[in-house]
Amino acid sequence: MPSTIRQVLHAALASQDEVAADEERTEASRQHGCRAVADLPNRRRVQVSGVLRSVVLRPREGVPTVEVELYDGSGALDLVWLGRRRIAGVEPGRRARVEGFVCDVDGRRTMFNPRYELLPRPGE
Image (cartoon, rainbow, N blue to C red; front, side, top):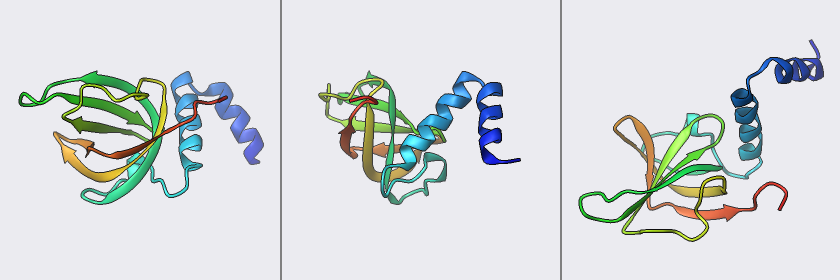
């Protein structure tokens, strides 16, 4: 089956979540040097790109902490900035590229104090 027909059938039969995930994977793959969240190795320095889905201020052991979920269509990565109450521009719906060491915390891929670059929103 030619890929164009396959794409049309997928778009017609897929749920909105599946279509959004496909679009996010495509957008994330355009970022040079970035890896898919689903393929991240543990304890390695990597770059990842995606959309910020949630931003929460949550103290950890008495230290203010900004916790963010980054989604790239293949999976989610928790970003944790220790000692911060807010980070200008880091808000749900914003796209970002982050770089840092990935580790597992309670079974979730996590990156502490990553370097980050806010990317333009679609259409900007």
